[in-house]
Image 1 (cartoon, one colour):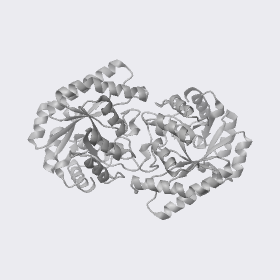
Image 2: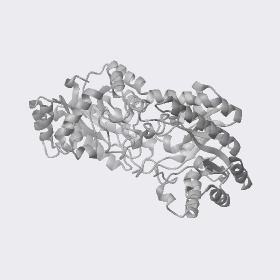
Image 3: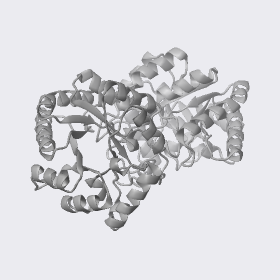
Image 4: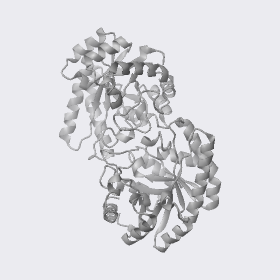
Length: 272
Length: 272
């Protein structure tokens, strides 16, 4: 993709950099948007962080990540709701229009019940989201995380959840890593466009073999995902927002991060 | 499940045992059915193996596994079709009514094209399957294998493929490990019952965390899959065949296999 005006990067992609370094380096490299992980905000005032982002000429795309609603006991579930409310306020202070949600899963909670926990958790935080003007982006996670990270595993399920809850504060984040395999993907991206839920687009690649289920994502072009095809579907559905580079990779975190950001820029232009 | 008459085991589950040992040990332990991996047949006459299985009082449930249709070059694809034809003949000689198919994937073939390779591969081998009286059981594989093992990743897709091809020689194998996370699972199992494709039911469990994507399956009851619930759906759809224990696990392969088979029997009775 030649339009670097749509190039965004997640702070977790360049995890060795603290937030201040990431803001400065991204701006220097021509990145246009930044999605801020809550870990990068630790010990910082979100308002000041938001001001620094804007002063550098960047746009805050989203705060990442809330969710994690299912738990065996009601006390933990209530605590998770309070955590999410803090994150909604944090996103508003940061000036990010979206809070990305990894909805959660728990090995001791059966999947059907965990899905109920997700829905009731979302319904509990929606009033505050509406009041603060922050949309909640449900990110369907790859089914390989259904046991411990998220029981929302397809874009259909995320769209169904948005329609079921029926609030304009609900939307979806499409990450190619999680959904590239899905034979329903094109249809569900089109549906997300129709129902107004398509709010974020994350890119990376899927390597084979995968060395680690969490921290071996590929740089765009390294793997088997047809990213331009999926981007085409997303654009056909009316989405004109950022393509956010979100890569967790021990391999890339171990290298010089300036050099890595250069590789990301090249991969973004050639393979997104 | 108390009905040990429906207890079957895959030879790959007890990989350290050769076929002759597996037949003897399974029969002694009260196993009723055996699914034979092609590796266990190496250097053996399938007819003689089938006779030995029947003489031990066991039933040959399936031959595992054909498929692997997608490849970048037509020569490889043609060779894969010949491999599958050999396996169809092998299943017939063994006396197994099913050939289980892992349909295949290839990192250098885009997923949409790979799905076309699967369909044309199946169509090429169907005439022989019909002639030999062997049904082809498409096993949807977990989406985490979409890059290198199978591009058929949901039961809906497998059912669609069977209906699309429209041959009574096509059917599906439901393995809880691959499909447990799918919000459409109950509906697609019911559909498989209606359209007559529901031909095999495989059980194991999903551990969290998963130490290895291939060889860290759990024994039933060790993980987060609600197996009795899925078995209920399968039975409601009219299936009365075997529940086949298919576990790939370095941890269990490293232990005494007699003791392991005892654990499997107990887990089958308590958690299937």
